Image (tube, rainbow, N blue to C red; front, side, top):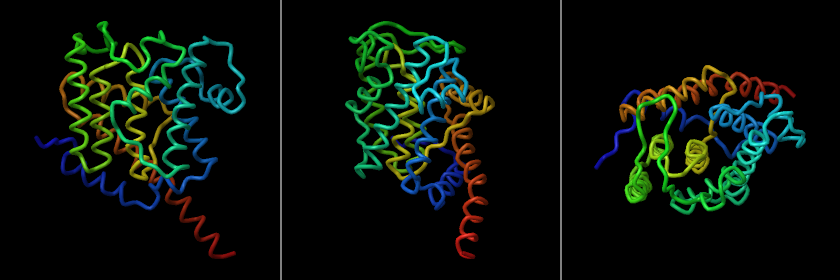
Length: 260
């Protein structure tokens, strides 16, 4: 069965992103990766209701100094940072692609949920029902159905050759399935990022409240309609906005270098 994730117009936007020399993950410096990791942690934490501001997140992750807030909020951010950096080091440092399989998904979940869920619930399918705030959609309750749907998602993502389509497919479907007791969207967002980094594409995140609201809106629409369109638009436009922002800076840097 052919998976149709992007429309023809969205595929054109995806092609622009994939072919841009400014999208290359391998060109990022160590400092740029650290900056990206901080933004990722704030973005992902904020989506989950984390109360740390961007400045507090930056201070926590660079110096270890915690704000006077819930322990769980600091732990969430540290887990996100450690998981992101660990994955980056595997892909960029060792120049290896990370296989998207059951072991990888369970490992990522174990990293993001460490100290936040009972040890027996880390990297293992849930056996309890869960609910998602803001939607009437109810994830599968039966463990057998969860397991079978999970395996289907892993198998079907291999049919997608376009890395941006694969990233969106994995993110949306894993988040919708909610295979774990907690930490599902954090795991799904990291999977999205891994697919992109595997393809040497910079994953783009945001500190803007508008983008966080658009993320939620696009994902909730997928839960309820099964359509990727709204989330895909948000995902692609976020990438294109970054390219628009960095191109003038890169071009100016090239001119400066040529004149020295």
